Image (tube, rainbow, N blue to C red; front, top):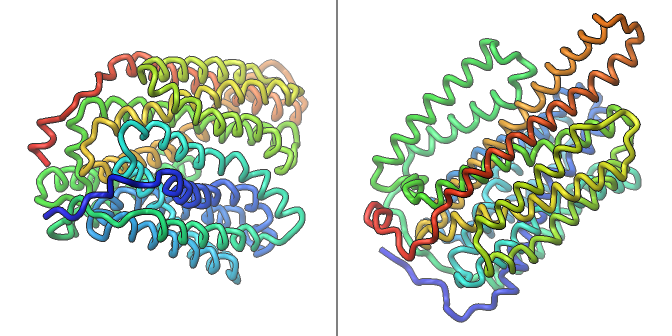
Length: 484
């Protein structure tokens, strides 16, 4: 059964403004809480490891609920699901602001993460199902700009709020923005359903929830518990087993929760591999640079946000320009340029010294982030363009799910590498006869940051030969159409 298609005559700008509001406010909450964690630790008189769950729990819920969005979007329509997700996000923002202790805040943040995890795949699916194909590159650039502008402004915005107001305002300010987004969704996004699933895949739902949550917890806490500890190994084994069960179920179910048959489209699969490699390297900058600035150069959170702001703004502002270029050239050209720029910006960051100037860091980060602008949108759009419209919801859910998993994976790997390399360099200094412990700590940490940045540069270069195999867009993917 197929319901009505989206209207042919649509107003694209109001739709993209509605998408912008939803995407912006949801992503903003990922970056603002990082700055607030020390404040919350003091406010609730608790341990850092406890308060850290306001971020970890949020990210776990985001990653867990992203893959189920395709089914619910088809079942209830993406418009209704978008309204539901934004309404839930608004309500949980109020609850977070009213939290009375660390435990209640963590619980409300996990709920908020569940609603937030739906927003990105919903908005991506809306772009590919409603916007005409010839305008999708510009639309997805606008969508990506909103997602990148939020982390650009988030640390500076959070630092200013925490300096001038209470931590509760990090959540109160979500409410009017989210309400405005809901009003725009109701007014401008058309109601439609391309497919109506016959039944709910309960087995798929249970297996994906267990596999996602166990793998993400293992990746988030592997370094803390030890990668060979029984907790970490048990979670990894459980996650892998349930992931295999989930994949088997989705490939054999009559109405899958997440239609993995989209991976039969070679262009989509190769683009997803490129996007995953870029994501791993991308997280190195968002993780390593603030750590270096605050731990080694003793820069305040607000100053850190201001240092990172030019690069993040450059990344967001380049998106529309890249969207125009996409219609004029091959995505392989843009991807190659982006990957080389990312590598060119990342390599000098592996040469940091304790007293390196902030202008040097800003310049390198700007080059690097312009490279991200040239690579992330073309990678996503090149793959999604090959997906039939009726499967785009499942494709966007899979895209966002994989990105969340690889984001958590990269942070876990980089954190572990940072720690192990710091220990290695500290031992070298001791063997060389250096006695000053403060000097050893600072120098070994700086050198470990340089090591990890160099590894991140090598990782992003792996995407270069892969993107060259990206096939040209075919008018129809007959094999997938028959399988679906």
